[in-house]
Length: 290
Image (cartoon, rainbow, N blue to C red; front, top):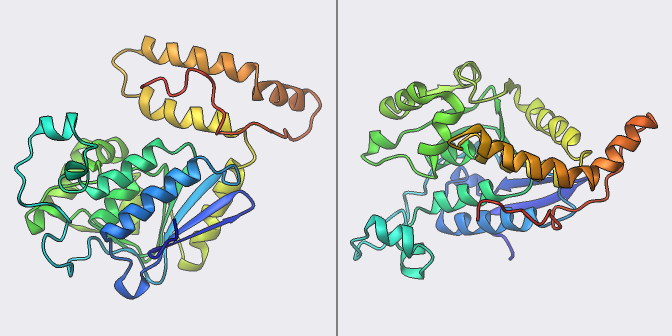
């Protein structure tokens, strides 16, 4: 797929995915949603990509949904009367997929399923879906000029992009509720204090800080990284630690006969490990949740 609203650039194992509608403050459109889903799916299977940094072109990260779109601005089919059964059991049928399901949620699900770590470099305004899509990313860094807002209730709608699942896990239930209830615009210091963002940086230092983290990640086994990413998200939501133990056991078993051999040998030889495994070739039990 050629991208009209994004740029996809890989250098030294790091994909920089840039939201690229700077004249519209990178406002979110249905085309952008579809391109983001494609980009994360593509990166997941791209051996040249070890980590992903997401940022925005110009002075904004993403100013939320483009409200200038004619008709239903969320791209939804108002002729339907969908039920929970419809979206649960027939969610992949075209009239439900693109007429009922939240496009921001499709992006968050693509991020969640991705095998590669995702770092958000929030360079400016991130409002609405511009804020919620980052909740599905693993690490968030903000510019000192960043302003983030979960403004849904203020305009009579509800949070989307799976943020009701992600945001409480990131900042805790009480803080997530407060931010959504009040629709307050949050500045960098508040975001760091609440552990929404790892750190705040001067604008020119933001991407270098994100790349510094990504550079550490891409040195490691892509299979071990992919397993770890899914284990942390999925096992922490299990009902009992035994369920996590079952997955941990298979993961360490297959890692020990794969990339773990090079890791142990490099440790014994006091050198950097050189991993040759590919996230396209995961152990046979992956994906264990399907």
